[in-house]
Image (cartoon, rainbow, N blue to C red; front, side):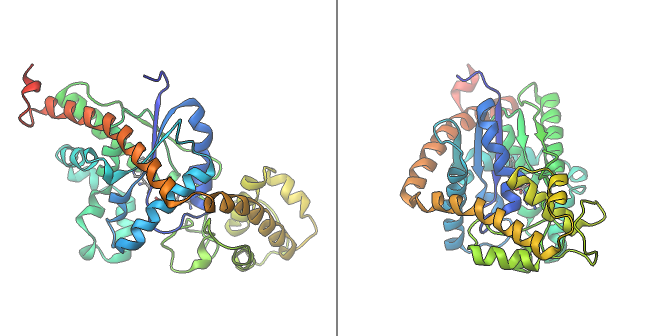
Length: 335
Ligand code: AMP
Ligand code: TRP
């Protein structure tokens, strides 16, 4: 058994990952692997809370795994697996549904945002229940740390509430996890609308830079990115478009925002955007080469191994939960 504390995080396989996913999530995971026993999940059961095409979903699962691997997640040290390959996630979700209260769920802002988009009458019950499934993901692994973007803070809070409530009612069972939210790169905003986060589900493809975008597309998207009417470059909360572009530049290039502002002092947006496109392309090309070198077969083998490892931990925890609650008919539970 490893002495390290456990860390769990996941991403939905809903289309190509974008720079926001990378800078807000995956990038932080790479360094955390050294300090934690890390479990990284591809949360396909979360993805189906909104309509998915089965063939596209299948491909997206493999593609997300490929990004994890190409970005530097080491499958020998960390566990990478697909959520639906481990049945205990859905099972514990059901159990936690009986612990969660309507009052907890009605506070969830992401449900409100997502259901407003589709019209709440037409939203799936799964979308409403999404945060409970996420709590099940986290609690099955005695997770101590959950590295996520700022948008997931409320879901981790709910997870803590459910863990504490369960422990109080049925006896100490779950570790109460904490969110690890980085202040830098926590929210990369849309290129076409810097008041909303960069998102795969945005209406326009000019909202995001996909990790699979070609260099030409990256340049086009950056040149079209919304800034404002002031001609100079400055780093200012009141200039969300410019601030977002400087953030992306800084996170990928390692220079501070001040250094970047100084570098473009007296120059216009044309030069700045060309510089940024250069930085983004320089980051993407080697990542894309590494992705191309990982075959579907390799990905499947790694995911199978991951599901076995994760499944062993999860089924033990779920048995413990059943025992605590008096569920099932297993003679071993009477001993
Ligand atoms: P999702 O695409 O919603 O499954 O998100 C996967 C991970 O990426 C989560 O940890 C999110 O918090 C993070 N993430 C998604 N979009 C952004 C964004 N625009 N900026 C920063 N992090 C993001
Ligand atoms: N809801 C998360 C998101 O959209 C994805 C997710 C599902 C997750 N289960 C998780 C993240 C467990 C961390 C831990 O980003």
